Amino acid sequence: MGKKTDKMYMTASEWENEFGGAKKKKINSEYKPLPFSCCALTMVPFEHPVCTTEGMVFDLLAIVPWLKKHGTNPVTGLKLDPKSLIKMHWDKNSNGEYQCPITFKIFSNHTHIVCIKTTGNVYCMDAVEKLNIKTKYFKDLLTDEPFTRKDIIHIQDPHNLSNRNMLEFDYIKQGIQVKDKAVVIQESLPENNINQSGTTGRILAEMAQKKADAKEKDELAKEKKPKDITPSFVEKTEKAYNAAHYSNGLQAYSLTSMSFTPSTKLQPAIISDEDYMFTNVKENGHIQIKTNVGEMNFELYCKEAPRTCYNMIQLAKQGYYDNTTFHRSIRNFMLQGGDPTGTGAGGKSYWGTPFVDEFHPQLKHIGRGMLSMANRGRNTNTSQFFITYASCPHLNNKHSLFGKLVGGMDVLDQIEGVGTTKADTPLVKIEIITIKVFTDPFELLMTKDIRVEQEKANKKALKEKKIKLMQLSQGTVKAEDEIGKYLPKKRPVDEESVVVPRKAPTKSKGFGNFDSW
Image (tube, rainbow, N blue to C red; front, side):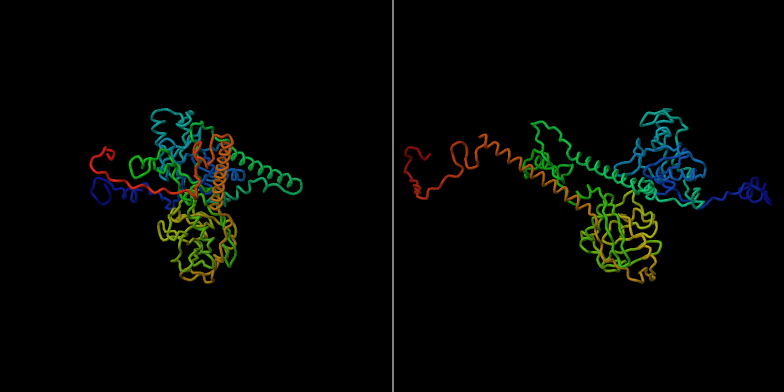
């Protein structure tokens, strides 16, 4: 059937090349998928997600300014009505990972994720298919609100990822620059869009002062919240500031072992101060790295990476980084320092031994000026750190990111412009003169809690003293120098009293009168 052959069939290559068959389509080899948890406009994890009917997810703070300026969908380039955006409701587990609220399956870049248009709730397709489509029960699995099959929006389909290719987005093809989320938030503040001169400035200052006073009043009201009413027969004890949510186990020990003193009261275990700080710290820290080129200010994410931030703050307070150098600089990559030896092979942590990595889903090496820990592998953090010159997504979940540059970007630009040797060592010595700690949230937390604990102890002692004085005045309790009604606690010693010697017992012969029995 083919040319110059007697076979009764034709191969695919013969049909394609010799008989004008269908040609192979050229497939674009470059493919960069957008992570499901990122905004399609800013490429960073969203905080206030909204989506279109096509399944593209945006952050509300980023898409609204875009629509005001362009009025189009940044992915497709078509017109987009702001009213058509759907507010999404994502569910998270205790570790901050997105999951399906029905099956509790953790979402990944390979999960089929859908959103219900009428409610905005996000599920995995498995739950919707088994519980809605197959059973023909078209009601939301959480709110019971009815919907149709057309209301199922596919956010991420592993079998059709063409709409999530970042290289095919319309605004990227046109080369349109998108402002950072922090810049958008800053520009959206009223005080940055109003001329604050004259009467307007005075009114805005008064409004800001009233807002601060109201916030302080709310905090005082929370502190003065009345205590729960406890029955008189229930003994209520004050817990220590570092009391754990689990017991110390003395009840179980004393029940199963005779070597322990019997215990019938449930007592909470006491955790160490470091564990308490790492669990309860909420505020961010602030430090300044002073170099011979200039000063750089950093904000430390103490809540997301408490152990790493605590190590940095304590070493800075000890002067560990004083008069050290940045021994490594790679243009468009990073600047590394924190080694007292200046070789890149030295350095110790605050505890003297390497400590574990700390990763957070919202902390990524995206952008310039990210502060992260250098290591030799997993859980080998010491004192060395680095500052990024550009985005380094390949370092995510490999190096503990714990801070960001918030002031002194021009100093970082000057340092990046310094020439280096083949070993990436700066030709001009870049020295860390000192690192100043502006805000230490760990110290503030411990100082506050210890002060509150001391005040509680003082109030308790004062209350016990008042109760004792009242009982003494009413005669219900005797003074400490008396025992019972008549006997004094300490008997007076008579110096002239004569000690009578004890009479030695006499041995009787025979049985006698049986008194010795």
